[in-house]
Amino acid sequence: MSTATGNSTPAKPHRGTIFLEAAEVLEQQQFPGQQFVLRLKSPECAARALPGNFIHLTCDAALPMRRPMSIMRISRHEGWIECLYKVVGEGSRLLSQRRRGDVVSSLGPIGQPFVLHPNKSRPLLIGGGVGIPPMIFLADAVRQDKRAQWKPLVLMGSEVPFPFKTRPSTILLPGMPGGVIGCMPLMEDWNIPSRLASQQGYPGCYDGYVSDLARRWLESLDRKALHEVEIFACGPTPMLKATAHLAQEFGIPSQVSLEEFMACAVGGCAGCAVEVHTSDGPAMKRVCVDGPVFDGTSIFPTG
Image: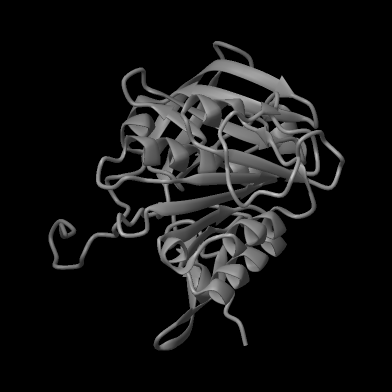
């Protein structure tokens, strides 16, 4: 680790890895449910981003406070990143009005990423709502990782229309309830099986929580296959808690990405701190730079 100039104080691990860029809007697509996919020209971030990282965006000149956005896709070669977000307040509303050619201030990539383990070759990726983007990024990383013969499964849940046109999957997936055939076309194009869950009656979707659909699939695995599973999840806190507890019930590891309000997003204000259970007892950790990805058991222990 490098040291600060003029003394022996270790530099913060994130120094030299977070970049401030004037990011040009390349495209802004709107989907039902006030959801948007924003593509930004951000070459420094695109060159370094990993699944689970996020960016901190200035939504409008009139709003000094930035907004954290999960990274959904990147092109290192073309230098762009994509974010999926939902309009929930003034900041995201103003961001949704940005058009091609506009410039927004971007700070990133920020945060600790998901970590794939080759001995856990059946990664189960679970995304809920605006927690879907990191799972897409991670799925892309899995298909490019040559360290193992990966057998990923992506499960997505949403109570508003999905931000893509669903279609019946052509990939056979044992362990799925009958009629649950809806998938994300991009995953299908990548030859990665995916299934969808919702309580809104969308065709081809599991009628219930995405964590319950995950349970159904886990129950279909034999002991050897179960030993190869690791869960990765991002979404609302109740979903993450259910997912982490599910992992503990089946004796498999989990990594969860937390959603938290942030002011600085670089560890200075500690306004996003959460309690994490460690071997030395409870500790307060900052979601922005110590996370947003944490071990599921450390955030949601049972008992």
